[in-house]
Length: 85
Image (cartoon, rainbow, N blue to C red; front, side, top):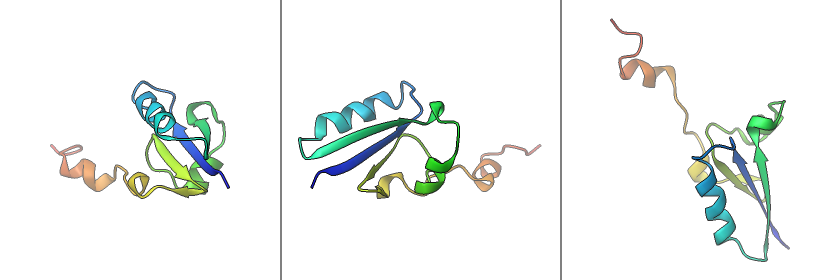
């Protein structure tokens, strides 16, 4: 059975090297689908995988660990002095 590899991008220059890395690493046992989220008008894809950052990669319907729970929080902003006088 082929591995289903989904790459979620913003279609930007920062995402392109990751897309290429996946393509270069994949073999004939992998089926790659690229989702350019800047072109998708609904947020169901974000919610399905709980995507917090881009690029992100899922294999067989599961978001890779390296792509999880990395998000900017209000606490991060406050810690950096944003909103402080």
